[in-house]
Amino acid sequence: MTIRSIDQQIPISIGFAQSKIELPEQLLTDPLSPIKGVAIVAHPHPLMGGTMDNKVAVTLAKVLNQLGFITIRFNFRGVGQSTGVHDHGIGETQDLEEILAQARTSVFWEAIPNLQSFPWVSQISKLPYVLAGFSFGTYVSSRLVEKLQDDFPQRLILVGTACGKWDVPKVPTNSIIIHGELDETILLNDVFEWARPQELLVQVVPGADHFFHRKLHCIRQAIIAAWYGVENGN
Image (cartoon, rainbow, N blue to C red; front, side):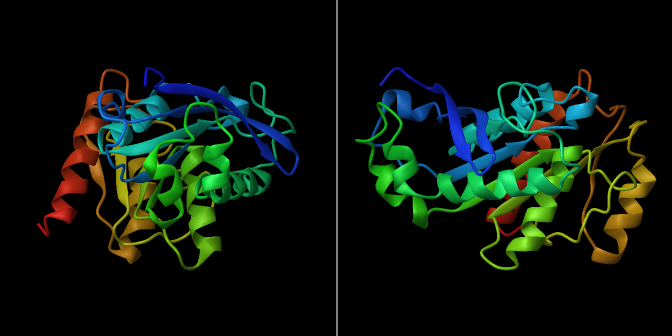
């Protein structure tokens, strides 16, 4: 196998969502290697220039690939080649829900050239899934988790949680929450106010602004540390 990154138009109820599917590196050398599941990354605000190619969204996809997940980054409705128009998080939540539902079926993966023969395709519906979002994407991801009520993701990863900008709902206690100390767009204190009654841990990156300029490696380190800390029971 030589393909690791796949451009895919995913059908949704309003048309199509432009997406980028990325496979874990180990599948390049060992196609029979097991995967951990599928992870979907939600990007920042479309009206502020947010797309699936935002550097924080790309960083989230890379670290989830490293953890063994197939990742899907996609453009919300009205962004890039995705159909539709911006819907203030309501329609975007529906888009995410529909993409997640498809990504957890074998039929979806069997329709993509060069993937049909991989063992994980037939197992995908039984594997865990992860949702990750940055800024506006945290609002959309958390809204979907609230809507699902059960069958929660293995982990919810929120970077630059959009508290104070939108009414971000409560999230599972094992969520990974990362925020920049110097975030001027979403104030750290607003995140603390949201997290405090839920008794959630917030990982603060010293010196980081909202877009984590020169601090992207800290996002990776925080996720890896939190992920394996929980898995090891620490």
